[in-house]
Length: 205
Image 1 (cartoon, one colour):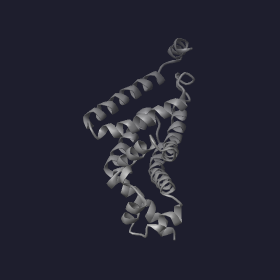
Image 2 (cartoon, one colour; image 1 turned 60 degrees about the vertical axis):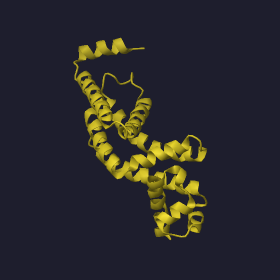
Image 3 (spheres, helix red, strand yellow; image 1 turned 45 degrees about the vertical axis):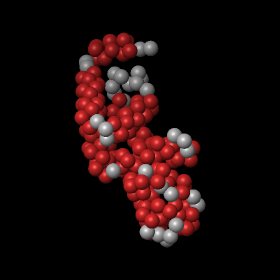
Image 4 (tube, helix red, strand yellow; image 1 turned 60 degrees about the horizontal axis):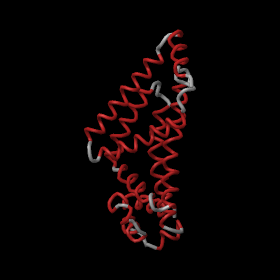
């Protein structure tokens, strides 16, 4: 029983990769999973619920691999390097296509929007936790709104994943620019106490 459920989840993800969200239905998912179409409704009740489960399962698996590496990250530069490795893996695995299709479908479908938002939160939470840790002793702490920054970083990563499909060199330039910003933050973190006080005074709202 559990095996059939997993086959449907895997089938849903592969169907989105092959046919896009508009070509994904109970029939096409069942054909990909090589099971009876009625099992979609038996296990999940609806195609939407299956897509939600598939999106969360696929994202959770990727986030777990990403989170394992986050514990050893000691700087924003290292966080970006980890993001670059993830970027390469996601592109090779075709996960960008799945996410792009879910985002496209979510624009006009509240149920898909709910599922996609939940999946994105799985990415945002560990990123926010890591940035909070990295920024704890920075002179920029208290000036940078970490929750918003984590969402900006996650949104930027997703945008770069999609952008990579049409302009790989441009996406690489964007990642390089983020790398320079990370270097700038590290320089700021290395300032002495006098310079830190001056910077804080300058940045104070």
